[in-house]
Length: 370
Image 1 (cartoon, rainbow, N blue to C red):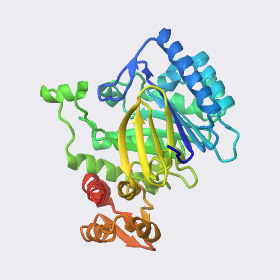
Image 2 (image 1 turned 90 degrees about the vertical axis):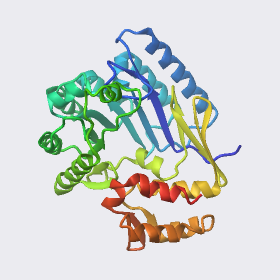
Image 3 (image 1 turned 135 degrees about the horizontal axis):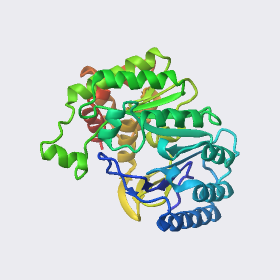
Image 4 (image 1 turned 135 degrees about the vertical axis):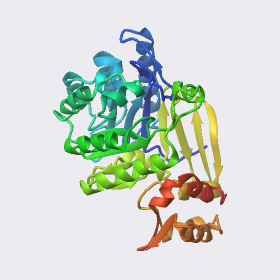
């Protein structure tokens, strides 16, 4: 079917040095000399070339290479992939955002220079914590000092550096989280994300909880940790623009914003999702399997729901357009406001802290409109 042009491109690299105890992503641990990585990169390069020839990459505005651990590919493989990407996408386009994910244990100065030279202009580092005891519990293959060294290497070329931290980790104290947050702030990176740990079914953490060997953080602890992150980061001049993300002005991650604002995106690689849409239909496909097939009312409900992940929420004008297909939308937002989940001010409906902390209720009530 004819569809709107893709404006965001995601490349998935499913390899890591080791798998963390909480991970349920489509990844696998492998040695640095594993030939499967060579074969995977070759297939991804061919897919990039094919999509470029089909004209599917001509309107790309953001690129994100994630995983897994893209930097685990090493210099040769990663350079080959990024060179093919540079031939397929106009990376020199004004304003294009090109993010590379990296983990500290596989990042060095040479790799930083290679990525920068081949067009990357944003680097996202999976630090998770600056507490060695917490890192050992998570199964991370790096230390706090290794994370500091990686940030220093990244700053040799990249101004736009993001750090990922986790909170609500079993056994993580409030003091430990506060120390990690303050050390991240002291590094003066312009973007920090703070994610509450979710223990997913089938992971080693899940098995440990079921066996009584691990006590998960309760909802109150996770809420307290998220509020602590908000306090420290906002005091340091970061704006919380999305439920888990904070940025200095002008450093918001546009690629992640694309996911929450209905921008069509193309995913290449194992387990990468593609979202295709036109005026009447939205589809998501992963590994050739349709995971979502939404009609126009469902699209409108999803857009309202996803917008509530963002601090800016929904404008009155956007709500009026949604109401053409979802007559109950204005009343739903009024009800959410009465419950303290959203607030109406300056012509916008914005999520409150309570709305974000009770996100499942907020998002569910909006999507149920369809």
